Image (tube, rainbow, N blue to C red):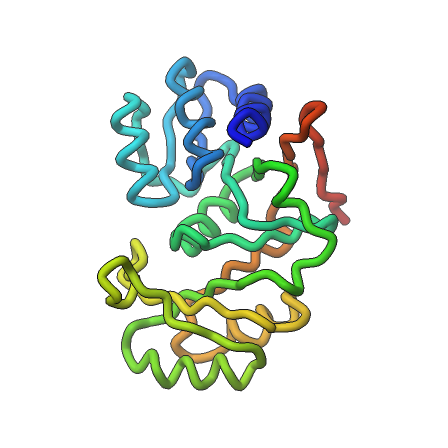
Length: 216
């Protein structure tokens, strides 16, 4: 599987030119991409604290700007409408901000990430810690089952933004769920990335599959 990740990551490097500001994603495939950036004259915008640490160790200069030429990130799942589900690593809000501000948002992954439907996938929802149990009740009223994510010490997992995450399953149609949930008080955002991905690069046994979003 690492060879498929490498194929997708190396293909994404072809989109990067010297002088660019590059959004730096999170996850194992994105980390391979970051290692390839060592040979590019670019500056980066990190989508997570973990990515920030790795980028600095590789000598990639970091800035905080919304003027991003290209962002490259991994995904937990993607369907043929190029709707993504992200947030398995807990960086979904910062990842979504980087994606939104990028002129071109490229998603890289391997063949098992490509799904016919996202209905059976787990959708992370980032919420404010304040009265989060009340927010959980609101999430449950939107449908499905939601479980507070815990860390290795069985304490609530804390995102880079200091928030909690509920992992929601059996939610039915993911876009409907997102549109209902994102309006709830206490919810920061969800791991559903809608109309953001411009290009998806999928590492397969025979090469890299390229899918593009058809813009209206």
